[in-house]
Image (spheres, rainbow, N blue to C red):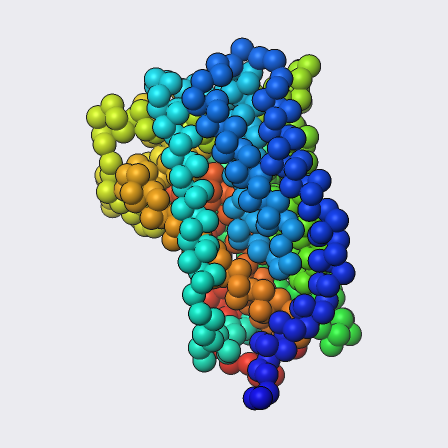
Length: 490
């Protein structure tokens, strides 16, 4: 029998490590699956409210129960599936539980302007998209596991280039802090941050790219540098004996405390920071992965609706007054299902499908409007202006983005491809996220970051999310190398 390769030995080691956790999974499987799939949805559905119990309501209940079953499967799996787990956590809360509570109460955070049939169609399309995502994941699972030479030679972090990225992070974040008026602004409110951006002269409609770059370069390089140094410390005994590495990591912690704290940043971005840090600090812990997804549900129910305390200053802040735990989910920004329905109504009212135009605007977001006068606007902004809302900072979930650009067939194909890609990346990450994985393995940093940022990408609009994606890609291009030698992290 031929000797096993390194990946096979790593997978065997993984199995030995997770045997006790598998027993724990069996003990938790029944209450967890029943709680997410049956008890919580039925408990919400049984509450009294002004909502109509029609086809849209029962489809919403079915979607919630389906997403609960899939999320339970992600939590109880023997291997960590970060991208798929993040997807199902978002679907369960933002497209399942919260809209179900809204359907029961008959209240929505954003008005649905079209006929009830458009809402029913939106929920049905979301459910079909979830099924397409699962089919894509199954196709990836059935594909033979053929390791190419490129896969056996992982992309690594170059040590000198990481030092360069760290310098860039400190310079960019320092300019960001100075531009907005000093560190104290970052601990006041998001309203103060917006005022600082306006004073910096990049708040006009024609300067959305400028806003994205100012925020992005001030926050993304600092986070990526911290993730890479954190992984180096966690996985390398040699790094823990180097005072320079410890000091740099401590300085990056202080820097991120200023520019990436929950006071001055949107909640979804802070979720990105927390998820990526958690999965980097605990690179092989299946227990921590399960706790993160399970606590994510609790946080979304009990904390997230009230987490805009620092969005406004003391004078403009209005605390939520409610007598029901369902109301905050109907009054806050879980508007994804309603906005998908509004997008369907918007397209049916005349514009029709855009055939990739919105996606092109997201890909080429950096092109200024002075060069591209017909550059597409954010999908959420465009639909919000058509609706006549005062606040056009509205979501546009990936279902709506794909449907508006490519129709129902393109939406299904896009979500099938997303499921396939997520499963493939999760499989490769599972092989790399072992105790023998080198400290400089870049995928071990990138996948946790993408898992956290997926909440923003799935919520949309894509145009708003493109700036940080491009900046992160630039930072990764700086540090990556295919050579595994003394110049990489050890």
